[in-house]
Image (tube, rainbow, N blue to C red):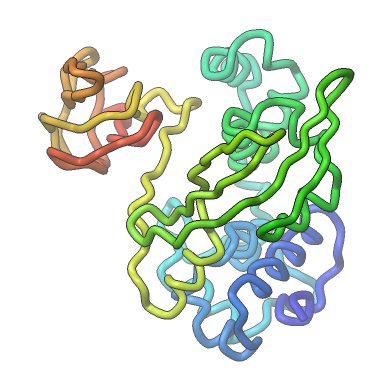
Amino acid sequence: MANILLGDIPKVTPSSKVVGDLAQAFLNLKISPEELVDNASNLPLPQSVVEYFQGALGPPPGGFPEPFRTNVLKGRPLKDGRAMFEGRPGAELKSYDFTTAEANLKKAYGDTRITKKEVLSHALYPKVFKDFMEFEKTYGKGIIEKLPTHLFLRPLSEGEEAHLHLGPGKDYYIRLSSIDKFNEDLGTRVVTLEVNGEKWFIRTPDTVTTLQSTMVGGAAPKRREKKDPTEKGSVGTPMPGMIVAVSVKEGDEVKEGQTLFKLSAMKMETEIKAPMAGVVTRVTVEQNDSVEGDDLLALIIPK
C-alpha cells in the first residue's frame, strides 16, 4: 500500500527506504490510506517521505501522485523557500570539503571514532549519520547489535523474560515487570525491568503514543530538541538543570564568549556562552525551564 501511495516507484536505495519508512509510519498511525492522503499536511511523516515529494530523489517515472504530493508539501518548503526541486537536485550541489568535514566530525565525536568511512557517511546522509551517532551515544556502541533479532523488532510483553548473552561470563536474564502510564508532558513512560533479579527503572520515550496523540489534535509532548554537535552555532546544555537567566533573544547579534544563559545545576550556577560570533536565529527556552543534558538552547549563524 505504501508503494502504491508513492506512485508505484522503482525500489532501489534510497527510494526503497522511502517506501519502508512510509509503511512503518502508516502502521504506527493506524489510519486508512484515504485519511493518510487527506491529512498529510498535519501528520508527522518521515523526513525521507517529505524529501521524496520535494523532489530530492528526482522525479519518478510516472510522476508524483496527487493530491498526496500537494498535501505533503503544504507548510514544508525547502530551506531556500522553494516548494520543491526543479529537475535533478544533484545539479545544484556545491563542491564538498572533505578535509573540513573530517576536522569538524573529529571535534564533535573524537579522533578515534571518525574514519574516512564516517566522513563519507556524513557527506551522503548527514541527518541519518547524526541520528545514528545520537543512538550510539544513548545505547552504547556495539551493544544493540548483540541483541537477538526478535528482541529488537518485537518488544517484550509484561511478565515476559528473555536471556541475553553478551560474551563470556556476561549472561543476563531480563524480565519486563511493568510499563507505567504515558507521561503527556515528557512523552515518556517508566519501564521496570528485572535484570538477574535486580529491579531497574528506566524512563524511555514513547514515540508511538506521541504520534497518535498528535494525529488526533492532542498536545505535543514537551521533549526538547537536542543540539547538533557538528554545528558550531548549536548551543546546548552541558548538564541537566534549570535555566535561571536568559540574556538573549532571536535576532540579537552576539560576540564569541558572550553569556547567553545561566544554568542552575547541582547547587551551582553555570554560564553558557556563545561559541561563535553571529546572529541568534532561535531561542528554545525561557527562564525557569527545566532542561536535560545536550538540550538545544539556541542557534547562532555567522553574520
